[in-house]
Image (cartoon, rainbow, N blue to C red):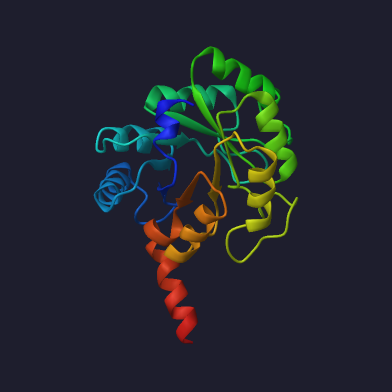
Amino acid sequence: MNQLIESLRGTVIVSVQAYPGEPLRHPETMAQMARAAELGGTSAIRCQGLADISAIKGRVKLPIIGLWKEGDEGVYITPTLRHARACSTAGADIVAIDATGRPRPDGLTYAQTIAELKKDGILTMADCGSFEDAQRAVEAGTDIISTTLAGYTGDRPKTDGPDFELLAQMVSAFPDMPVICEGRIHTPDQARQVLEAGAFAAVVGTAITHPTSITSWFINATK
């Protein structure tokens, strides 16, 4: 296994992202947030957008899982080969890509995209929404598979917390693959649970780096 990927085994990765229009959406702010997560002990940073990737790469000494979101429907997480290559050039050590079977804007299949990136020596992480997506990613030669899109593509119901069922399926079927659990890990206990369930690593975003959502949880719980 690649040494960089091996360094993520059994760890918590922090996703540092802000949505369009939010007050924290600025590369320098995201870089400061990433540095704070580094001081807290995270093993890697997942972030989106070329400016954020570049800014965070210059601030932390951790591996960067980079992606580029364009649009808000269909394939919008690193939707084309061009987007993936740009993420790598901006400083991403691993590039995260939508691994669904949905049409990609550049007309390439997921497998064709991965084949080209492998020629470039770029490590890839498949954001999966179903077991079929995970199969597609493994067959294409992806380096990491994850549950990132579970509950967001219409293939599976959206669970309240992590999709433990999909995680178990992926871990069982692909014992030699790094299977990362991402999506709706909202507490330290849930992070521990997914690692105990066999996840190679856990990605936590909203619960650590999205104060608007965290505030709303408290407000809604006290109404």
